[in-house]
Amino acid sequence: MKTSPLLFLLLNAAFLTTSGQPGQALPQQNLAHWPGIPTGNYSGITPLGNSRYAVVSDKAADDGFFIFHIEQDSLSGQITNVRFEGFSGEAPQQRDAWGNTTRDCEGVAFLPRRNTIWISGEGDQAILEYDLSGRSTGRKLDVPSQFSTTAIYPNRGFEALCHDTLRHCFWTTTESSLRSDGPRPGRGFPRADNRLRLLSFDDETGKLRAQYAYRTDSGSVTCFGRAYIFGVPALSSLPDGRLLVMEREGHFPQHRLGSRVSVKLYAVDLDTAQPLDSLPALSTIEPHLFVRKTLLASWTTHFNLFARNLANYEGVCLGHPTADGRPTLICINDSQARMGNALFRLKDFLRVVALSQQ
Image 1 (tube, one colour):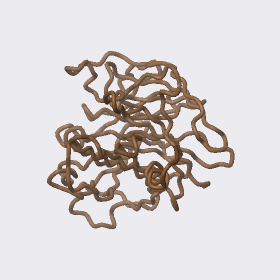
Image 2: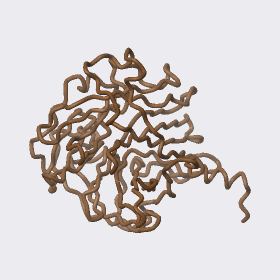
Image 3: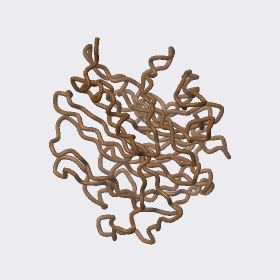
């Protein structure tokens, strides 16, 4: 069957948005393509070395992480093979009515010096250390009470976590503004932005080092349906010392048709950024105190009459560099355990973004 020009443009909209940007978003890869990969609510990913990655799910019975072995093409960076190696974890202190841990594991980072995994929980606003068998070590980051569960909007806490090997620290932020820093974008506050605090924690002492003010783009939705999400679900350190910030906006109409998720990947140069000396409300600070950001890549996925590639990306980390030295990023989406029906079902996707040489 011949493809019409209109259909061709719609199906490839996700890739056309990267034109003129220093990052190239490659086609999504469905994890179901490789046998033995369990479906999940994947929310974070971090590299362990030797093509192995720790992945967390925000709806799991136990606290812990999955191990994936991910191979990439040396020229393009595209994923060529994925193998599931297993799950490591422990029974949680508490489970919800659906049998899932109430920690709500969202972000994950690897600390090479101690050979341990750190996981941020949105349910308890804690960032805890686990050994490679998935057992809690008892160590945690010293998170100020300013970021407690009562200080965040519901389900808008510590989704993002990464480790910075150059600065020997962890980075995290809340998905949406703190209650004290401004409104949460959505119904009642259309086209609002998020004013976030990029937090740096010493990876030895666990103490807070610094806070930086970060402002997302303004939301694009004015008519809200079944659900709306907008904020920062993931962070990753880059080889050149910059911090990568994933901004994600999802709009889901009442009858689902017309749903879309837009992702923007920004780089922040923290060496030129000014840390906050005090803790003022971010709604009151001068514009120059927000860090500057550079767009690296962006794309939009859809569920409509012409495209069914909808993917809610929640995690990002560094992948293997290409043979010519380009860094790559691996992004993972949350399919809500492949939620859907006989007509359409969400899929577990990975997406590679190949960056320009640095």
